[in-house]
Image (cartoon, rainbow, N blue to C red; front, top):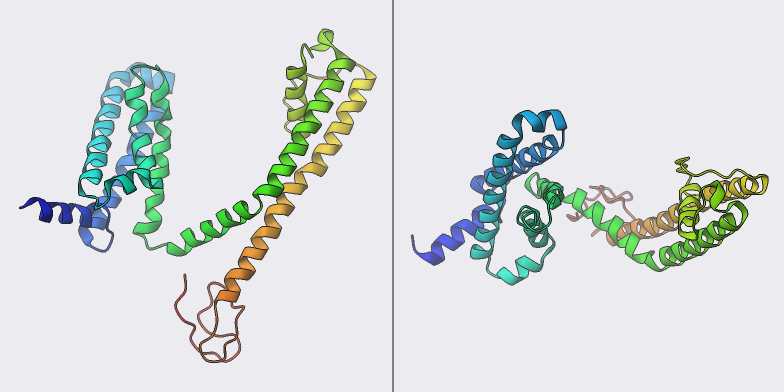
Length: 272
C-alpha cells in the first residue's frame, strides 16, 4: 500500500467515526484508557502495590508505549499535523503520555496520567451524542460571557478574606494558632467558603464573633456566582431558541429539542 493511501486509511480509522473500523478503534481506545486508569489507581493502594507492583509498573509502561505510538500515528496521518497538535484533543493526547517520561526527572509525576481520562470524552463523538457537546458549549459560552463579572466577584472575595484574615491575626495572634497573616487568610478562605476544617479555631470572644460574621458572610457570598452564571445561561438558552425558526410561519423561540413548530406543527429544520 502506497504512503498516501496508507495515510488516508489510517486517518479514516483513527479520526473518523463513520466507518465500523473507526468506531471499533475509538471504542478499543476508550477501553484501553479506562484500563490504564485502573492500573494507575490500583498502584496507589499500598497492599495491592506491594503484591503486584512490578506487574502494574509493566502494564503502565505498556499502555504508555501504546498511547505514544498512537499519538505518533495521529501526527503521521493527519493532513495538518501542527493543527492537530495544537488542538484540544492533540494537547490532551500529548499530556496523556508525557508524565511517564517526566517521571525519570520528577519522581511521582506519573500520577498525572490521570488526565488520560479526559480522552474518554471522545465517546460523545462515537455515540453521536452531539447534542451533549452542544449543551456543554452553551455552558462554556455562558461562563465566557460572565468572566468579567466573575473576575470582579473573586477580586472582591480576595480582598475580603485578606481583610478578615488580617483582623483575625490581630485579634487572636500566634498564641491561638494564627501564627501569620497567610495562615489567617487560609482560615478566612476555609470559613467563608463554609468548608470549616477546624484545624484553626478562634479562642477569644471577639475572635468568635468575627468568625460568626465571616460564616454568615460566606452564605451570602455563595449565592452570587450562581446567580451570575444562571443569568448568562438563561440568556444563552434564549438566544439558542431564537435561532430555531419555523420555515412555514417564521415563528421562533422553540425549545432546542423541538421537532415541530409550536404554532403550525410544521417540521422544524434540522438543528443540533
